[in-house]
Length: 74
Image (cartoon, rainbow, N blue to C red):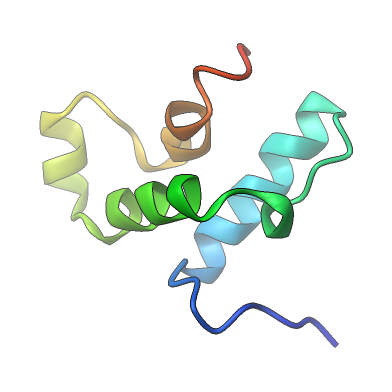
């Protein structure tokens, strides 16, 4: 059974993207271990429609990379 914090408003797709992102990094990190600020930023981006993300030069699949760009570089 998977348990998610009730106060984190991320879509299941965004949680899956974080899992793939951190597995790729091999850092042993998981989305549940991230700070609330970064998750909140990711959730805000995830709620935007695709055209709004495109206007910002962001693809939906890039959200984890954008949110953690100051920590990791892929």
